[in-house]
Image (cartoon, rainbow, N blue to C red; front, side, top):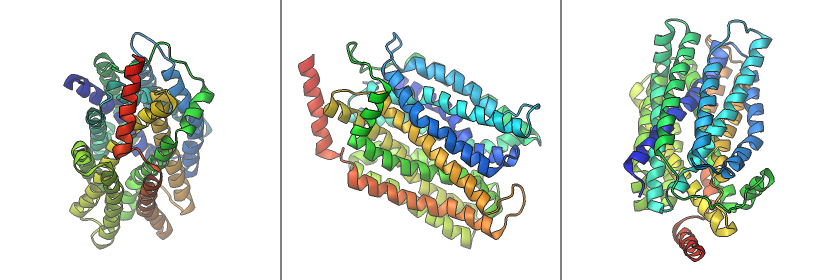
Length: 451
């Protein structure tokens, strides 16, 4: 049985790491274009190119973690190392050296962003890979998976709703300075919560000492031959694209389309609360309704929420209550997706052990990190190129074509992606009900025989 102390420490680790993640995914595009004055097309292309490297980097890190043997286990050393390095890059990205401008600034930002992605990989893959190593009980896993997701959502909620006011307060009229000081504070919280986590959270299901180490080629083979992992990749990629596009363009939507920038904090604040609420309800809903129905709700609610945002944006665009309601409905589904996708990844680890005889938690969970960053790359490229194509100009009233382009990115794309995600899940994912229970039972019998 996993203790409350372990669960809370794991949750606090997620809080710190997701502060470092949220400031990038919520504000980085805006910071680069509107604060530093970088060209949107360049920023979008940078996001895409940097993530191409992650297609190799992330599975390679999963391989490294799975091959690690130490008295601290195979996860915690990398979580600590990755945190220290990533904290430095977060501050570096949001702090403009006075000596850099023009071409030198573009080079500096490119280097820092690529380093941020690499160091985030070092920390994030082993962090989430610990879940199947903490318990092999289905019910307990669902409870464990929800805790870090709730704390992570708290980070996104607080930063999304309070980020702009904090930046204004810290910067005192200088937005660049505000971002720099905020990133410094986040880096400090990140390091402290990770130290607490690696001290109190220890893996319970250990890799056999005589288990074979794997190479990079084998890591890719493990991913591609696991048909349920491939199905999950398609499903979760659609969700992450939906979340990243809507999250990345939201600040532009409320600033330029609605014309009330403060509604950005209202929308993100209330939607964040809804996400936490649905995460807390996920274990109960999963037991009452079953995972298939929960996943349907996870995909249907965002569609309804974004349709509401479209409707309210036309009939009452400055009504904060209606905007908040749309955000709540959309993110109720988002919270369910976060909960169920984390548990599904842990189930895929079991499926790999059942079918191929090896667990390889970190290789499999490396896919989660890769999906988040891939979605960030594609969404960043789409936003950057889209803004350029429709004639977006920072800090001025936008043209009709720019307004329409922002609306499509904020509403139409997320709706389509949510529908695609459900179609993939329905057609290809099979680890539910009796079939999954049979897999778990077969694994237990095999372990007893080997013991």
